[in-house]
Length: 313
Ligand SMILES: [Zn+2]
Ligand SMILES: [Zn+2]
Image 1 (tube, rainbow, N blue to C red):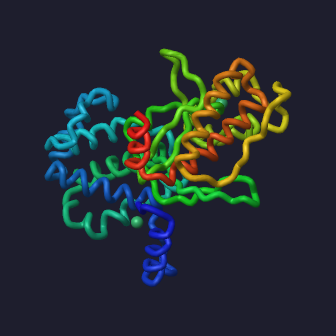
Image 2: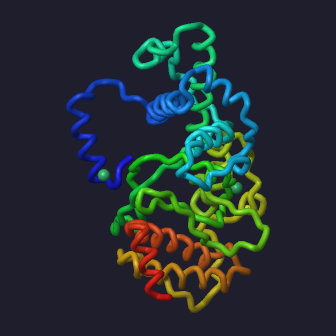
Image 3: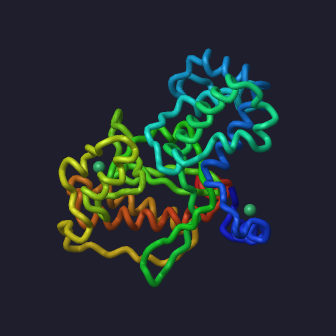
């Protein structure tokens, strides 16, 4: 995990000296090893870990109290919450990881002594791999490419978020995800009614990708998407009707984060006002503009954002 692209590049260069030509560990494999070692450190032994997982009544993160990070039990609760996440996705890469090979090497050779222990660790490791493959959120730092008129994201790491993993997908999502100051944040971009379910996009939006292609991608998550955009066959942006004659195309220039916050509020108000005509060219175009603004905002540290809000009150 890095704070910025520069840090990652610098680190990559250093690693390149030592690792060039070697097969890299897939990110979720490296994270799985980290998770296993953390779980063993927290519980003290394989037997304890096995017992604690077996005794856990936790079915979702809401069965646990995660409000007291200073408590001894907090990390253990996180472990249980992670192990309660859904695992619907088995990718080619999950299947290809050779656990036998991994368990013979350091540090696993230190504590895997019996066949029973190896068997438990095999299923535990498989589960962690699947949890990560299903639930990891890619964290991106965005830069604005003027020529292509699109923002471009560099991955700076991944986040496993026990609450955020509960969001379901929609091809026309009500919240958007950004990385701000090393944290994953969700921002509302469409009006949400009381008691209405909140949806995030797993990366496949109806305005830029045809329905069949989206369904194909989403199949690997184990469901057939029946979001409103899929049910009502929302058209691609290029085919969406224009509903407003006085529409001013937003200007996709780079701007300061504080200016972007101001613009975002205006954009959301605009969407809210003509939302009964959604999906149309204007609402969709404004939502794309919101994306652009969120990427500008994401360069602002969260404390600074809080300060800017405090000043206004
Ligand atoms: Zn850094
Ligand atoms: Zn859909």
